[in-house]
Structure formats: structure tokens, C-alpha cells
Image (cartoon, rainbow, N blue to C red):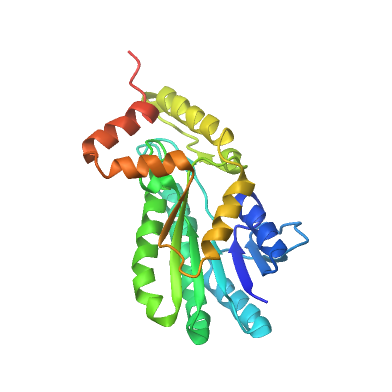
Length: 266
């Protein structure tokens, strides 16, 4: 039986993916700070930003199973607000979870995958890595960093039978919208624009793709003999990324700004 580890397994994409993988006959270990009530998964309390904890968890799983076929790095967080009003603490928090967490879990899984000369690492990114969203600057940039990390890592580990893929979902209807952190002390100069921008983003997300559909696409992707380096989920997002290739960066930036930045009110 194949073995998968899914981080951020207590809700959203992670929860749905755990259910699907289990139904497909894969033994699933779910890691999250909040223990999931999902009975189809072996739930483990863990924080992806704590290297010692992850090292112990992975060692325990490998000792028991003798293999770890899939690592799905889904744990993540979001912060909204202007750059000027964002605290250093919040900046460090989002990069700790989104990027450092991905680094730690990937680093700690590699010895086991190399030993078995096989394994697939799947990092959940975002279309925001291709189109940086104003007032979600640090979410966009952390996801762009994950994409770059994945592409470089894939070349490092492919000689050992390991492949790495970044999943780029567009808007997905999950509780991530409600859990997104907002700047508590937003500056008055930005306040109205931030409110409009985040309101529009929240609306897009709640009208977004069904989480079950997203999990099915991820499963099909990791089940391929040759997993792609990048997989975008959602037809319109595939079109947007395709068109981006032919447009000047300045034009793309202005288009994104026209949708999400909003003009200053006089």
C-alpha cells in the first residue's frame, strides 16, 4: 500500500485530498496544528515550522511503513493589507508557514525517498504566484517563492527517482477566506482600497472552484507516471497564464491593478 503525508490536513484542500487519497487505497497521514476529526486519516498534531517535530514524525512514519510515496505540502496561511501597514511579525509568520514549512518538510522527507529511489513531492502554490495581487503582496510572493523552490528542487532530486510539482489553483471555495489574517492597524490612506480589494477577492473565492474538484485534479496529477513540474487548476486560469506569455509585464501589472488595486478616492 502506498503512503502519503498531507500537511494542513484539517480543512479545505488538505481535508478533501486526504479523503480522496484514502478512498483510492492510499494510507494517509495528515499533519496539522489542529487535529482533524477525519476518520479516514491517521491524524498527527504537528507544526511544519518546527524542524525537530517534523523530523520525528517522518522518522516514525517511515519506521512503521518502510516507504513514503507522496508528500503534499498544503499547509499555508494568508495575510491581507498594505505593505506599509504590515508588521515584521506578520511578514515573518507567512513566510515561516508557507516557505520555511515547505522547505522543512521537503528537506526531512528526501532521505527516505532517496533511500527508496522514488517519491513525489507536491507543493500547493497559487495562481497568485503568476499574477501578484495588491494587498495580498506577501501571500503572492510566498507562493512565487514556493514555485521557484519546487522547480529548482526538481532538478536536484530527479536523478534519485524523485519528482516535484507545484499545483497552482485559482479561486477555491474553502474556509481559507475566513481564516485569512488582515492588518489590524491598516493606515487610513489605504483603508477603503484595501476593504474593496479584499471584499472582491473574498467574493471570487466563495464563488470559486469546488474543493472536491480541486482534490481530484491533484490526485490525477500525482498518479501520472511522469508528474508535471507545474499544474494549473481551472480553465480560465490556464488561459490567463497562457496569455501572460505574450503580454508585456507592464500591461499584465496594469490589468491586475485595474481589478484589485482600486483608485484612490478624492
